[in-house]
Each structure stands twice: as structure tokens, then as C-alpha cells.
Image (cartoon, rainbow, N blue to C red; front, side, top):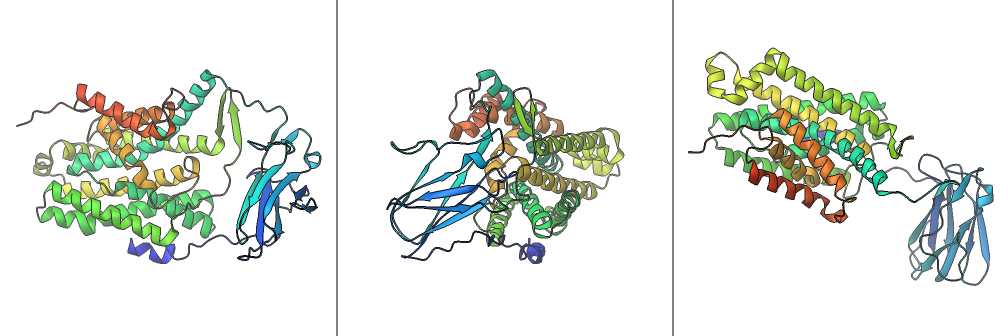
Length: 430
């Protein structure tokens, strides 16, 4: 990760807009600030009024980015409202979730108990004919699409994890950090350096592939030649994972950094709402999975990879350069994991955190275990199942915090019936 230090050192916080700047001062001034509109469509020129505790009011106009701000110097109860008549025709303000008795239905109440802090109020809007009601079938359809999307992105990373296990027998706990690295480099290339999305994405894939190659060349090949056992190598991957996590935290902090602001345009396909960016990410994932599948089945290097996975000693005896095949697997695995991290940051988590890889690590292992350890196509099937289970857990009644536990529970139950996984081969022990 040290080779990335010069790049990551350029990452910094986005500069604040000075158009409606309010700076809080400890014990003297607090700020009530916000914006009106959506991320992709702000509404400038709208009157926003602040009602003060003494009964007076103050009005400001939202700027070109929809932002507004008030400076207050007294403790007490304030309320904010916007002039909905200045919004475009057919657009209404979303009322507060819980208005106090006596408040106007479009008034947002703010309590200032201590001067010196900032309070944010987002005045969101929606179409006049918006209908918040949704039936169970619509929720189910939406969750299925979200599950397929999540499963495809998990599959990109789990394919590499499965290939590494198949060719080396190593359970790589640091593989998920390559997913995080893909999102972090996407932020660096696209957001910080300003590269176009396609160019930045290609740079991410190449950089993560190079990191995968470097890992095998500098760490795993020397350790294999020294005869270290799989348990020792697995402990090394855990240490590498922890080192990578805290390196990411050092450079990007503990918060979420966004590869690209906003979520893009949205398409309505029947009851399903999905962004065009999500559809693009799913298409890219499908194409890459098909390319990997074709390479494994129809190319010479793919056949060599399957031979090494089946029997490394026999493959070496038949003239296959096992080290070269394993290094290629590490390179491809790194590239796929980096692409998965970039797409995950763009369409699933709306950004990347230093511990994003840690959060999905168990899902990756669940996918490859469920599909069958060491089988690339099993990893794809397992990933789709895990993605669907995670997203369908909510509509089917599982609490949101337990959706990952439901997926892992299903994996455990299935392995009790079929220990080798769905597409794995039963092996004799002893």
C-alpha cells in the first residue's frame, strides 16, 4: 500500500461553498443551514423563512446550488419554512415527519440548546402526484432487482477469491481490502484528479490488477517457496487485511468519501425504480463475468488454470508453469475486486469507507462457500443467492439489522445438507 501514498496524500475534503457561508462561534453564534431540492436538482431563488423565539422572522433566498443559511445568537425554538409557491409547477415540499402541535404543516422545528454548533435542515421536494403507498408485490419486485444488483457486484469480487482458493488453497482474508481499494482509487482518480468516469474506471482496474500481481510476486510466491503451510499463510492475510484497513483510514479518515456526487437519473420500469448508473454497473458486471467464464472454458490459459486447480503437481509435471498461472490469477482477481469496489461505491453504498471491505467480507466467503469452494461458477451462483437473500430479508419480515445474519444462516443450513456447496465436488476425507 505504500506505493499508493503519493496518490492518496492528494485526497482532501471538498471546499465549502462561500455563497451562504455561516461560521458558528462557540458560545455566541449557531448556524441553521440547509438546501432545497434533491441532489441532482437543486432549486435556487426560493424564499426560506426562519421564525425566531421572540416572534420575529428572517428570510433569505436559496442560492444557485439551492443552499441557504441563517446565523442565530439566541437559544430557543426556531422553525424553518420555504415558500412552496416559488417551486416549479407540479413540485411540492415534503412535509416534516413529525410536526409539533401548532406548527404549520410545512414548518421544520429546530431546538438550539447551545450556541456554537451547526444544525442542518434539508428541504426535500417531490412530484405533486407522488404516492407513498406501495404493495407487497412491488416491494418484492424492487428487492429482487436490488438483490440481483448486489449479487452481481459481490460475484465480481468472489470470483477472484474462489480462483485464488482453487489454485493455491488459500483463504485470502485480505481480498476484501482490494474491494475497498477499488473504491478509494476511484475517489482519487475520478473525484480528486477529475478523470472521466470511463478513464478513471480503467485506471482503477489496472492499478488493482497491478497490486494483485505485486502481492504474489513480493509476498505469496516467496512464502510458498519457503514451504509455509496454509494456516500460516491465512494468518498473513489477516495481518495484511488489518494493515490495509488502517492505511485506508489514515488517508481518507473515518467518514464516507464519494466517488461521484449524486445518484444520477432514475428509470421507472413498472414498479421497479432503478438508476441508469445501477443498470450500467449491472451490465458491466455481467460482461466481465462472461469474459472470465469464456476465458476459463475456451482459452489455453483458462484450461491451464483449471488444471492447476485440479492437481498442481500433475499440472507442473505436464509442463504448465504453475507460478505463472497463479500470478495471473492474483492479477485478474485484484482487477475484478477493484472493479467491484468501484461499482459498489457508485451504486450500492453511495461512497466508500475505510472498512467497506470488512463489512462485505463475510458475504464474499458465504458466496464462495455456498457455491462450492474453488469453483468460479459456484461463486457466481452463491453470490446471486446471497444478494437476493440479503435484499429480500426485509420485505419478508426480517429486521434490517439481521439481513446479513439471515443470509449466513441459510448458508449454514444448506451446508449441513450439502457440505461441498451447490457446485462443489464431494471429496473423501482421510
